[in-house]
Image 1 (cartoon, rainbow, N blue to C red):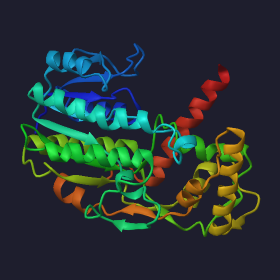
Image 2: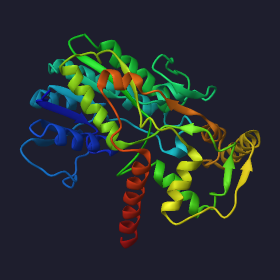
Image 3: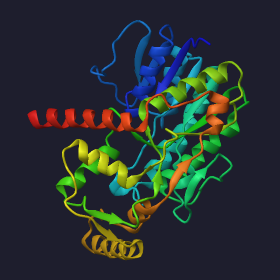
Length: 353
């Protein structure tokens, strides 16, 4: 199945750029339009006649309409959005901006795609649309689990946007939603840096809860492959239309083991281990929040971060395999290695100035 033309919003970002690379590898004759709010001349992509760049803001219907009317893509892959930094993940200070970009921006992009006559729309959702309700544990869940409309601001925004996309499928356009798990890989600015920072902060010896809770962590290139498969499906069999899919490595890993693997790559082994019961850590997080509120600062330890640290979050990948033909090409160990090497390279470049 050949794809003629694709527009990728957020195409210079962490996942967006991986999707562009995957498209160029599998569909070298496909014309790709990379759209982002800021487009630099130094994108890291090898440029040719089948790759173009356009600047647009998903919160501006006019700027989107201008881009779509010029390129009229066959497929839209919508990755653009706000992912709050970890310091804001458990707060609601960014709620207005997150909803404006992630929900209204998706509505605007859908409208522009329909007006331009696009055939297929692949939305980069998130597992957080389901799993960010911390009152549950999510062991081997599947797509029958309900969306969590009351959770983190990010999870709520992804649930609302997902609903928009799926309700639009069949109304002149075929659409589906992919729900990636936590990502690692080249360009990761959240997962690897936060785990690595524990070394300098002398936090590697502390285990919250039993440390055996399983998470899905996925190499970004695998998620990019899934987006290409979804686009191909919507243009051919269309069995993915109107559907949502959890996408992950299908190799759940204990978060403690993930952290140990990262620290080992950087030559660090925790000198000792202290297990902190979840209840005690939750109370400490509450006190840290109160202290931060009184001082007008942001707490790194919070009730939300403790619940995250103790949570079980991994999904069943059978639906994506059956309908999309998705299987992870890069295993979790290899993905962690690639991620660590990339982050180490960036640290060296930063040190050189």
